[in-house]
Image (cartoon, rainbow, N blue to C red; front, top):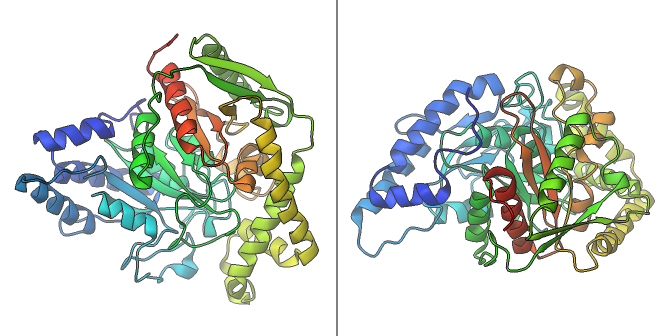
Length: 464
């Protein structure tokens, strides 16, 4: 399948073409559904596709087209008619929500998640539910519903997880699309990085997780996937009702970017290291950017250990009934079971210490961002996507740390974190990604910086 840097239309171009009558929701959705049906089995990216002439997707598309043709005072918003996919731990009332596990294959929620209600109110069109690492507890995507979720650039490699299917659905889309995932330690940003799309974890609690299967409520976030940064900004500002920063593309003053070293850059593989160095060089050439090093003198591994304890302990509380069933244990993926068992063995004192570390992380990251910095920059993942056959059976080994080392700290503190492709991985390579992190509540600043970096890296706009 051909992979391109951008979809044929961005959200804005698609919106304009809908209003002009040069395309229709039905035509767009039909094209996407046909494409998904061709690739879904190969990549194992979906648990359910809303296909068929009378299926949810096309029925809704026809209703939206009728509203456009009706004219009058109707003024559709920027997400009107936009195809979206939903990670299959997010409730869509009346349709099964498997949570990536056969134990929930028959669970049909009676209501929508709050994020789904927002998207439907904006006129979005659900295409299907995307596959995930079982119970959202895994960053490789190899323990997905029905087997490993595979990378769209190289199917022999992992998609990343747990929101792997969402990232695949965005990368392989024929036109404008968005996807919603969840992120407890990197589950949006990791697959976004490995698949070559944009992934954003907003400040915690900015997007409600009501109607989403929990993993670790203390750390759970919802997150967004798009193909490009202009689309990401449109998606975020529309669903939150916020206004984009005026300097999103041409900053009124230089963006100050801090680059922490040591822990955040140790153990990079050759391709990530090369792309990261070239990215910093290109940003350093820009008049509208100031790149400077940030000292990192403390041991950040404390936060990784603590994040793991919180995740496993809270997850084991919620799924304890499954974990106490001998029959359920036999059918659960071994890596997920092992992590849940760690949670069952985590005592109150260990959990309390981990939560204290979470409070400390807020101060530590705030200090990294001191001195007038707008964002921190680092590789999202320290390695490119490993091969599936190298990961299966080793999901909780060293690869887990290499994928999440730079993401999980920002679930601990709840600060906004954005993954942008440094390289797209086509042709002749695998995707790599840059992560930008900002202060709590400054999501608009992070997105403005991200859109600027996107333009420098992918549209040839330099020295602005």
